[in-house]
Image 1 (spheres, rainbow, N blue to C red):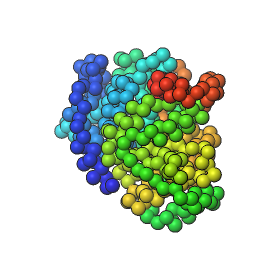
Image 2: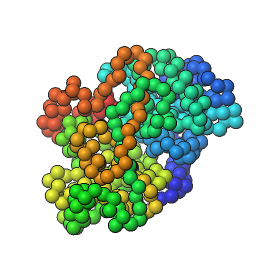
Image 3: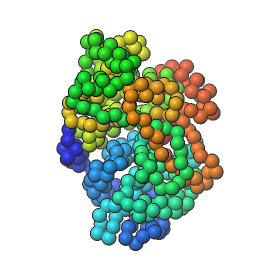
Image 4: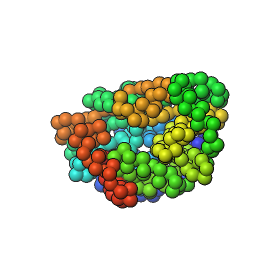
Length: 381
């Protein structure tokens, strides 16, 4: 689907009514921006279309910068959006920052761009705008009394000069119309697994609605990893708000769903985001089939970039799986501004403090992890 058609479909959605700044109105923020030519202020509902146009046009824009992500996260988790927009004297958008205020006993209080997103941070059209955003964020963070601000930048050009957090990488690859060309780019070992998977009569069923098979596979996969499960509402909200830009692709074999992935489509990019497969089907390599078929479909439908997403550096597991596809590996230049905290927080599964909890979680009944997971996942967005 071409970018302009994606945007038309997206902009036709009915806006959600109500102010996103119920606890902190613009008059309560007294931050002074460095330049009178650029004004930074909280997002208003009337900014919806101009915000998304700016995101689509910006080279570092992502699905997680769109208002659809705000609407989805707010509806499912109730986190408070504190989105910021920079405009010039003519009212033209010059920069945007998706931002949520998180409050819980683990993180205390923090500003995050953005919860459950691998990419975030400021999108700006100049150094002047970035400086204005940085100054506003610093004072806003002090006034709110947060422990820290986390910006999940995808590119160094988004950086605001806060402390760098280099823990993650992302993988991307160019895709083409030619299945042969796609296969030739894949390293030998993975190419062999892809060809092996293509020998089996698997096929893909695509849908834009809730999928019980996807939820079952994904919740089992997260339990194996020792990670809390998302509420089902998270996926239904994403499919609703990203309608025309997201779907669920199920790989079926002998009447069973053996792999499934929720994928975003943004401009010329294909972004598989939540994926899982059935370990008992590993002899037929459904994961390899699923991702190769998605690349093949993307190339045939005029997409140019396959974004395999974030993994922790040299962590095994998903990192190794992605690295073996021969894609471009790029560090993600995340940043944190420490306000009340003295040390950088680390709430990921790589933190040694969480290893016992992970092992216990892996042994719990699946039904219990599905019940407890939605409450726990809110603590580590």
